[in-house]
Amino acid sequence: MPPIVPNLRDFERRLGGLVEGLFSKTFRSGVQPVEIAKRVVREMDDAKQVAINEVWAPNRFEISLAEDDAPRFQQMESALVTELKQVVLETAAERGWGLVGAPEVELFIGHELRKGDLEVEASLVQGEEKVPPAAVAEAAEAGHHGELLVHGTDPVRRVPLDKEMVTIGRLAESDVMIDDKGVSRRHAQIRTKDGRSTLTDLGSTNGTKLNGQQVQSRPLSDGDRITVGTTVIEYRRV
Image (cartoon, rainbow, N blue to C red; front, side):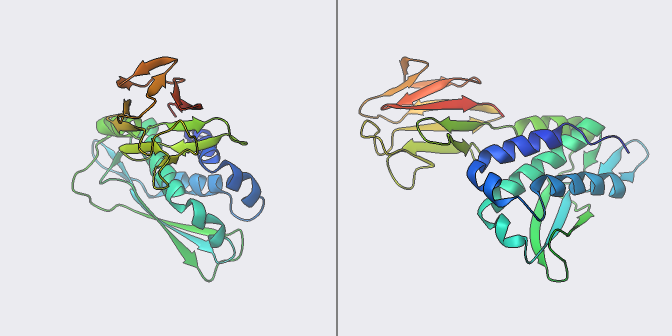
């Protein structure tokens, strides 16, 4: 079996950033998130099926955690599932495997498991469309949306761009809620499509700046700094 690929290090870095405070305080014992990713990669290798011209890897993973471990994952379950799906895509892309459907990941409680144990059941579940090896790399790249680093907090707040539209504003329901008098209730939004993120001002009172210049709508590049009110938000392509 090939060595564990770099995407596991990327997984740990991304996930650690998404839940920085929780990650450092909660996962000191028991099952670690990166252990789950390693098991998923191992199960992909063990359960892959070799066809005449292609290799098809499992795309569905049912992960069982011990009752003592499961509560620690509740606050980050959505982020963990998203990152594990990305690990599946990246691993398949790096090893030239195809998938019979989009990645699926579910977490369960294994009542018979002891703390620190986990079980991963991998299977090939036919989706609406197969993802042949040639297309897996494109799907893996499309999964790299990015993240926002909201400066002015300790530690710096990290917000994943894990959906097509992310809103910034003072409203409590904003994806990036900012308590800043210079920020409008609905100030700006970031739309991510086909791996590209675009910043758009939503008619805010004080406007939105990108790298010091007032903008209405502009594509984002890694390291760009967005200013709303007095708050600086850094865009990182993950």
